[in-house]
Image (cartoon, rainbow, N blue to C red; front, side):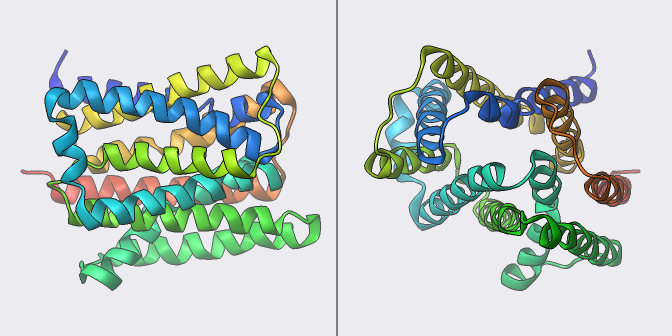
Length: 285
């Protein structure tokens, strides 16, 4: 298989692995703090194993090398984890995933504000369309009482965007240990706050599966950029919105509203066009 095709295949499998996340959260059927604890626990175990396998005897050094950027990324990933789960609990899966899909747009804006990175005109146009579309989706939330969940999804996208900008700025630092650290923070806080963490065996199996899927997704997303550009990897990420929404709709019957479907299609199309144009403009002739 050609390297480029291999990279696309690896990235596509990574997206497929992360897509069941929201469905498994729903199937777990537990409250916020209990779900946060078990989801974060098995994700942390998987990421710690991943860091250990990737670094071997240099694992301790990789953690020490995180420095302040790693600390900021850890905290931002933690905020994203807390708010993502809150969004899933308070709004529809479709709303949450569509809003979080806008992460690359906010990352571009933060890069401009804090790193003085140049933003192409097409990205400004994409940003305007995305912001208007989010407003279109939020308008339904005002009528249906899910606006708080939508706000949590937006906060999750903003914190992820900031984490990605810091990661790009500190490109020589492996941020995988920071992701594991953010999961451990969620474990610690939920352990303190939750009144009880006892769950049925069926739910435990679901959360174990969730940890396996997320670890596979993260590991493959780190491998894919060895064969294709980061822009091409990000181009495949909106697939999670499509597959994640479809899975919850098919298995649980949580049907997205017409407004969310329309907004989701608009956001995915404009993000995809922006990414494709960017890849073509930056590819060598």
